Length: 216
Image (cartoon, rainbow, N blue to C red):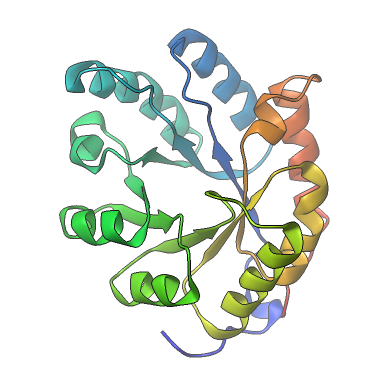
């Protein structure tokens, strides 16, 4: 847990982690996801679900998306909603904040992915890692400046083996975050709100990432 990371030559190339909008229109979301998954190498999709819907409706939403994501060899991660991960056929949950993570990690592990973001301090990140987090995400909630995010990612990369996901608010942030040591780059509005369209934006993100080398 506290051992230094492997040298850059021994680490896999960073990969994309796609963050969806909380779309109510499932057909449109599925169309965008299929286009995105066809455009670049994507390790995981974080599915954000709309607020105010009953559990059965949410489960049906997940079931409508899970097969397409998993067929592309990507993991489907739910943003929260750890209680419906298994019934929806998802691969895991992303929990925001240390308290939420500690409340739900036991119901997810060891069969499913338990990720955590919204970590306000270095201490919280370390506690989450020690509590079984499969990854930590920085920059996804109450986003700091890019400089502060780079510093946090670099600190993590130098000290911990557990993967780090860095949230890129723009495609131009991909390169510095990879240089800092991120294992995965999360992109959300940077691709879903791109006027060129989701497929073109994701392909652009994928090319930028493929051109980078893992940080040492």
